[in-house]
Length: 332
Image 1 (cartoon, rainbow, N blue to C red):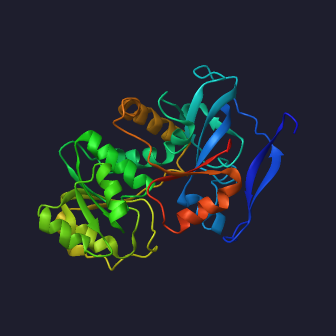
Image 2: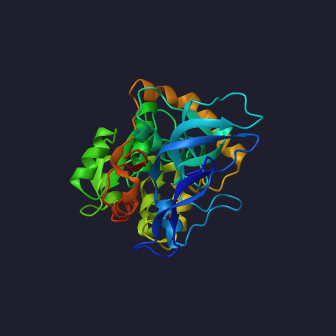
Image 3: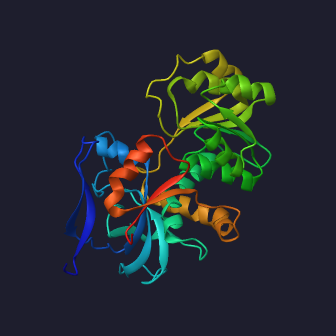
C-alpha cells in the first residue's frame, strides 16, 4: 500500500444484515488547524447504527465513513497547530471517519490520553464522557448535592453519567433491564437501582425519594415523558439525548410541566460547530481528565473486537446486549 492510502470500513446504507467491508482509500490531509491521527482503536456507537440504516447522515462537509470517536497517535500536524506534535497519544470525537486507519481531527478537539489508559479504553472515552458531561453540566446544570435519574444506566453514556455524578457528589437513581446491568450501574455509583421490566420507575423512585430528582437524563423517550415529569423536583431539568423507544412521546401533561416549573431540553453533540466542541473539550479536560489518571473515573469497556469482526460488534450493540463500550482494535 502506498504512503497516501489507507484501509477503512465502508458501509452500504440501509443494509443492516451485511454491507460492512474493509476497503482501501486515500489518506486524509490535515487542514491548517487539524492533525492527522493514525488510529489504533475506535468506539462503536448507536449513532453508527443509525447512520448505517440511513437515518443519521454525516453533517455537511464531514466524512461519510462511520465512526465518532478514536484513539491513536499524531502522525502530522497542520501549519497553524503549535500545541500538539507528532508522536503524542490522543483520543477525540470526530463528526465522521472514525472507522479508518487515519483521520484528520481539529486540533482543539484532542484529548491527551492519561498514561494509565490503554488504547482500547481511550477509544471509548470521548463520545460518552463528553456527551454525559455536556448533558449533566452544561444543559442539566447539575451541581453537588443534587439528585439525578439516569435512564439506560448500563449504556456507555449512562455509565459515564453515573461516574460523573459520583465524582461531583450527585445522588443517582438508574434504570436498566436486568440484575446484571444494574450491578454494573451500582459499581459506577448508582444508589437506587430500578429494573424497568419489573418495576414502574416513577412509582419506585417516588416511594424512596418522595422529593423527586433535580434532573432526569433520558436516552429512551417513548412513553417516559410524563413519568419523567412526575419524578422531577420543582424547577427540575429533563434532558433528552436519544429516542431508543421511539420518536413520539406521551401526550404531554401540561399541568405537570407547569406545576413543576420544569424545563425539557433535547441536545446532540455530533452536529455542533467546532467552537462549541472545542469549549466542551476544554471544560471537560479541566474538570475531569485528572480523575482518569487517579482512577476516580474509568472507561467502561464491555468488549474489544478485531476489525474483521466489526459486523459482530454492530450486532451486539443492536441487540442491546452490552454493559458499556464496544471497541474495535486495528491491531487485533
